[in-house]
Amino acid sequence: MTSSTEEKHTFDLGRSISGQKGQDHVAVTREEGSNLPKTSQDGQLLDPQPSEDPNDPLNWSQRKKNLILLIISATAFLPDYGSATGAVTLIPQAEEWSMTEDMVNHSTAGNVFMIGAGGIFVVAFAAFFGRLPVFFWFLVVASATTAWCAAAGSYKSFMTARILNGFFSTVAQGVSVPIKDRPLRRDKAKSLRRVD
Image 1 (cartoon, rainbow, N blue to C red):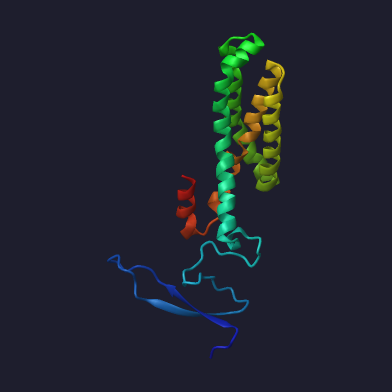
Image 2 (cartoon, rainbow, N blue to C red):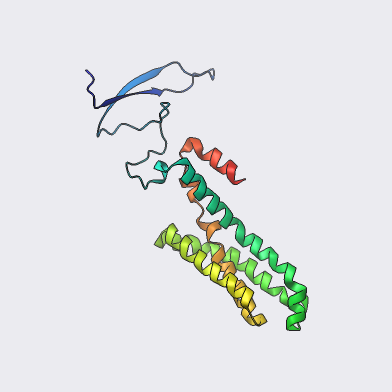
């Protein structure tokens, strides 16, 4: 006997030994409030199971998921790009500050070192404070240190800004595990393909 509050779902039991799609299906009824697993509109079992909360990333629209993936991918690209662009300004900076190009290049070395070392702190802070606050505040400080680099009037000021920029800008590389958490298992390959 089926009431109006029940939904009927079909679960595929998998593949047969020969690799052909199995023909065995089990019809399962789901009553409101029951603990049966959720399925997609085409009957596929959702893994991981989304909650009823609209703020659950698994319940977000595909457009919102793609926008967040784009933001995370772009910010993960910036630290390496930012460290390499410092090499373009070596000669003008050396002339302006009456230093050798090799000495000015130390700012790039400090920046690259802190990109690597900063990741350790990012992961620890994200585990303690949560990924979103760490991601947000580190990006705010990274933006401020980028402006500081542009406005630096001396080499010491520039070097300090570059080192701090490397530390704070690496946040997207260390906290971008939401790419792993965000999609359903069946959509992970699509999301990671978009990143490449």
